Amino acid sequence: MEMSPFPNRCAAGLHAAGWALILPCFWFLDRLIAVCKSTTLEKTQRLEEGCYLRPLKVVFGSVAFSILFLLTAPVALLGFLLWAPLQAWRRPFCYHREATSLQCESHRGFELEGKASFCFASANLCLLPDSLARFNNLGHTQRRALAIGECIAMSVSRPNIRIFIDSPSSCSTVSPSDSIVPAVNSFSATDRQAPPPETDVSGGKPSNQVEVAPIQHNSNQNSNQQGQRSAPRALLSRGLGQQDDVPWEVSTFFPANVDILCLEEVFDKRAAQKLTRALSPLFGHILYDIGGYACQPPCSCSTFKFFNSGLFLASRFPIQEAQYHCFPNSRGEDALAAKGLLAAKVVIGKNQKQREVVGYFNCIHLHAPEGEGEIRCEQLNMVTKWIGDFQAANRQPHEEVAFDVLCGDFNFDNCSPDDTLEQNHCLFEEYKDPCRAGPGKEKPWVVGTLLEQPTLYDECVNTPENLQRTLESELLRKRYICPPVPASGSPLVYPETDQPWIGRRIDYILFREKSISKHCRTEVEEVSFITQLAGLTDHIPVGLRLNVTMDL
Image (cartoon, rainbow, N blue to C red; front, side, top):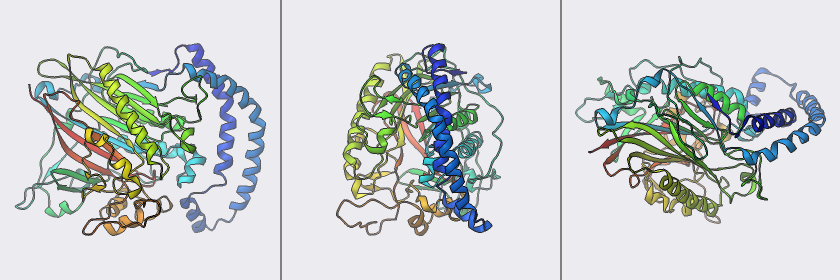
């Protein structure tokens, strides 16, 4: 079921009509730029095929799309005059709810055993309009959206099988992607596979600040069921390790049974709809097209927003409340998008005393340009306040809070001298980062998550398996992961003596324990760095699985 972001059908119809008038002009402009900008993959393919007609294609394509753009511009202007004022009445997200066969299941971990496992994942997908994505060396936005949706759906729907190693020197575990479990087909930038059979999730009704329909819980019971097998000890050298009591993994798949998925840079509406169709059989509650357009806040003279926030939230659990805030201090090209915070409250189930169990999940995408840490720190201050206000307004005395998670693309890392200001922000005193040893210092097993854009299609990183091997090699990481950013006017000295080369990790999943119920204890079960989207995005997705025990 699709819920319109507008208060009535009349406003929704006028908005659709306005956008229909704008779309042809927008599409021709997008094609005009795209025909002139090639990715490195396309350049390589033309060289291999001996195709020398590129100049003719650019010339004739530019002329044709320019003429079509100019012809449709007057109509687009009329559509814009209709579309822009309606944004003042638009709720800042679209909501898709799907009721499927999983609806009969409940996450009954707390009710039956007093404990449960929750899995979260975050990925920046760079799903901009095709012409703009090409400036990041990524093209074919619609094809990538379809492939990404199928990749994620295939991974999260598989059983969560864990292999326990029984050896004199190790008690670690190996994931299915690195074990004797039969492998599932992997994907590259051009591979395709049909989505899995439709399974289901439950119902709710989120709004900008809304109540949910009668709660029907969805489950992740399989995430608490783990198989045990013996496996060769040699498998320990690939993918999974354990240091500082934090299990970690470089995996060619998204974690099985992800409960909540946060995606960034899903700016393109058609791409967001493709992702929704692919993921809705597994995630029954999806918020997309998040953020405001035109002047934000409405009827103000602030920067005009041509793009939404790019945030996309998919949850197995009913979303009881949701609230979006736009950062008011963005500058430059970042000010053209409504980047901000999405705060959500989800209903998990009941505990052994039949008290309702809920969780808080927060998604952000911070200011991007390097050297502007003051802006990001101001935004982190806003995030801290907005999350606190949201939870204070929506927390009920009869509820137990199982988790409080904050994730997204923070656009700063924990190793660059240029990001020192953000690394020392008080947010990290509230929320725990399992990958962080301290301000400016990562744990030695951590992997950078920002790929070098010019080399996205090199053989070492163009498939999930190759990218996995590259991330496990410090020598190769130096070639394909973005290096730290030096402080202005200072040479970069990195890494420190006897420390590994990690690179920029700007994608985070953090959790907070102070705000959850006093009866709950949280333990990190696993941190994942995911290579499944090799060739489809310029970021490494990350995953976090938490074990929560509720003592009553």
